[in-house]
Image (cartoon, rainbow, N blue to C red; front, top):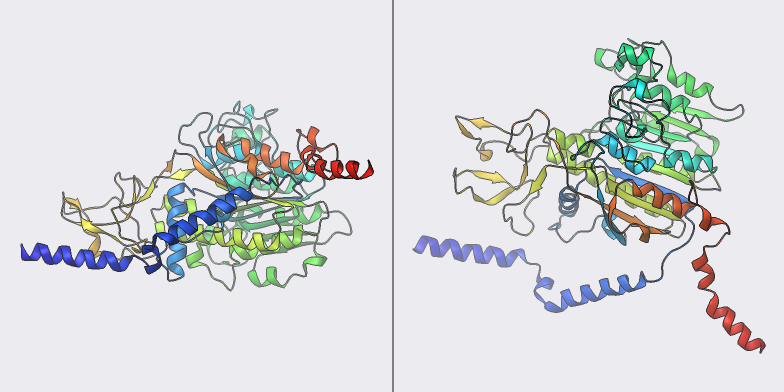
Length: 521
């Protein structure tokens, strides 16, 4: 009995110390709520400006549980408890939910979803930039079923456009902005089956260079898909897996240069130092490919050779801002998804924090007066954290209790399935015997799989800037680019753009006009 009493007393003492002093005062919470209320009331004055600029931030695999865990991680990296922290995306005034299913899949993939939030049309899993009439792998179903993206709509209106990603620039998310393919994996012709090549289908890298040749900024990974098979990589000349993959003998970096108009300056870079040394005022087109495949996880990144996502975004925005008609920029934190697939929550969450850092940087380089910024995800993952953890518990730490079934400790972070399923001596692995805080620790999973799977629940959509209020409630995912295009007066729905000001802007002048009439009378 004495032992139980002492343990209870210790728990109460620890619990009391977990609560910040100011939070014990009810007035703290009342004032915080009133401040939030004042901010909400200010939103009654809608920003109905025309969006000169559009930025779409896509956290691949960044479901709501990932957003929450990344928020806590961000706070803990700043030596705070974490739960009370704010991500940059948390500061956006409008939030919606997007339904992520593909036309043929309840739990979607990144290709069909990319077609939805970039092209405005839901599609089958594994396909990019085509309608749901296209069957995955069937080249002969593609012709006439191509759908264009908001990047193309912006370019057609004379805006500058750009793509920044931490994956290959030919990966599912970026490829839906410019390509039309029955298979997301056809990165180069070296990955395509013979029937697709004979059927006239083009690989995605070739489409990057040929379909919209005047994309001003392309930054990410994926060098090897641009060069002939067995071409040594410039950074890893001894590594066979990084050699070129193309069968057609094309040097697509040279082809990219050749498509540019006379008198325009096109720069290709593969090193961080080259990127940051550019005089952007003298560059018209920029292609940066910093790794043969995907870029390296942020935690493992060589900051001498590879730029961070934030650094790439800063360069992209400064390049695109030179166009007086504005710009569209797609920014993908693509390796959140990869971290989760590998069961490596620490990698995934640090990728999410870096994406959020890029959101904040973009906010400082632009204005919500004329820039509509949207942050969302393509899908979720079967990632969770729980276990009645106390306030300020390290996000990668243990739950405060042992299992009451197998009497072993467990981490707060767990996966529904994945490579973290481990049985030792016929029982669940004892996590106290492993380094669960390691960057590559694979969190325990309920079902063994080589790769953890996506989750099927809705994802958040955060919006700020002109017409951001159009993103509200629960939407089909393909609604997103239609709302963004409406805000920017691009695409097909432009009846409201016949004059420089929207109708609501005229309405706001009515009180002034009435006053003038009274004075004249």
